[in-house]
Length: 94
Image 1 (cartoon, rainbow, N blue to C red):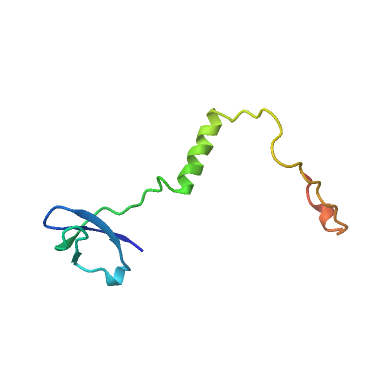
Image 2 (image 1 turned 30 degrees about the horizontal axis):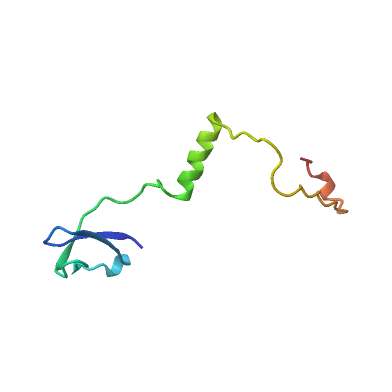
């Protein structure tokens, strides 16, 4: 649901979410209980702070500053299972 900005006569600005078809023109301020009018605000199209942004940022950083591995960590690698299906033998091997 979209976020909407509201501002009361006292100057308090707060956000609230509503479905697009049900957004009111004004609502009660949580601090002073006066009617706060809805404000025009820019759309929030940035992905900054999201999981996608952190992944992109860490990928770029690791290209120039790779993590140093000092030894094996975690559980031992499991062996791949052998399949007897003849169609699987045509697949490329890693």
